Image (cartoon, rainbow, N blue to C red; front, side, top):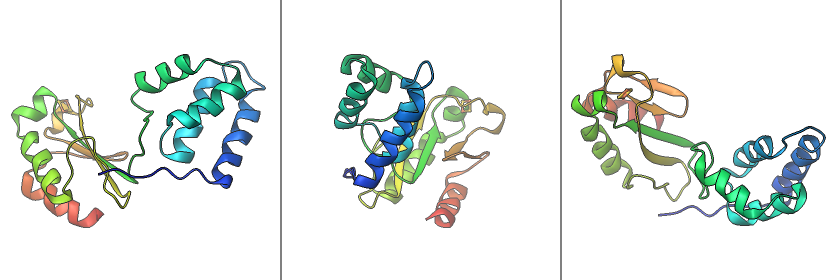
Length: 159
Ligand code: FES
């Protein structure tokens, strides 16, 4: 399943306004990419091309940055990004079962976004909250010491 990115005039206007602002300072690429990710929910190739032209950077460089850093994405992500930690501490405490339960509940595979654009399911590496293992995140919120049952209950509340 995939979500179509919407490139509206309003969003483009925001992107160009952001670039105008960032161009006045040194190193405009990273802040521009952050803004583009926020505005469009991702930075696909057609947006990268616009940024390349405006900032006079090569597409190869921009694409390299977008694919290297986890905070950027080429395909749209959902409003709520669910990340289940599969780091060692979480894994041995059953996080794979939590990931499977979410996959089942949302009918998504890892890395996919629901067609309505609400949810993206991700498996993450250790997020540094091993004392709370197993953990998962919904955007910035961390849920710790979760069982499959508890994860399902939390899921009902965020739907
Ligand atoms: S292994 Fe999951 S938070 Fe560290």
